[in-house]
Structure formats: structure tokens, C-alpha cells
Image (cartoon, rainbow, N blue to C red):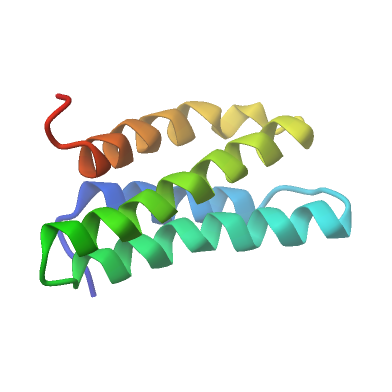
Length: 100
């Protein structure tokens, strides 16, 4: 279990909110997979030994976040967009640590 990692906590929160969204089956399935991918890539990245390996997984999580944000727009579920934007800031800082 990952404790004290705010980015991971935000990703879990967003995943939970995405799971409550009602949408056509194909959109809901894609939203579930994309939002779960964020959580899983953050978890996997946090266990990698080098910064380069960590950034690679965090970058994949950021890509999945962008997919999730697009699906939130497509399904008119913008109520969760603020949370996704905050998570995006956290992920961006993990991927680009020198650009703070």
C-alpha cells in the first residue's frame, strides 16, 4: 500500500469518481480503463529504482490522465475536471521535476 503520496491519493479519488459516471458502455469502459491506468502507473512508477524509470511511468500516467480528461468532456462530466486538473499538476511536476 502506498501511504503519504498525494499524487497517488488524488489518482485514486479521481478513479472512484469516474466509476460513478453514467455513460454509454463503450465510453464508460474506456473511462474506467484510462482512469485505472493513472493509478496503476503511479503505483508502478513509485516502486522503480531510478528517476528515469519513475518518470517513464509517471509520463504514461499523465497520458492516461489526458485521455481521462477528454472522456470527461465527451461525457459532459466536467464536475470532476478540477480534480483532474489538480492531479495533472502533480503528475507534470513528477515528469518534469526541473520545471517548477
